[in-house]
Length: 202
Image (cartoon, rainbow, N blue to C red):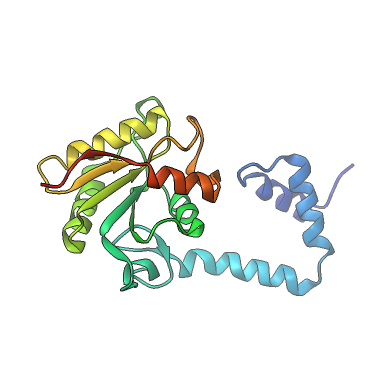
């Protein structure tokens, strides 16, 4: 059976979303088709504005419509403690769990030689500048409990060698091979509270 080209195109685009297979994509396309015209218009407008209105916080790397982001501008945040994460998704998971009151820094990547991924010098320059500007005393490295997370942690520790900050890593309350993005509040809280200090501030 041949379906309209516009319907097939929408299904194809939905399939590009993470975790979406052919059947789910078709179901989503039918859902959009069955909604009032205003829904499709609003969805299209939202998607079009998404790339135009959202930028990256120049200080921490979070997504925002205003630079700096709301977390960096919040005067009530504990600036002596910084949580370094791989992605914005990890930041959102920790923040929504309500288990951390410090500030964040998003690396925007990880160290994974097998996948050809690395972090360039500019990433670490931004991190060090953020630490210096906020007067950070403890850096919590919240990388995922996988080989890539270990490599990323050790690279950060090397880059911060000689700086007068404590470095800790979230404990393995998170399952090995798991992701911060999918962890529940209890697991995230346990991981943060049982973190291990790897190097203390002098």
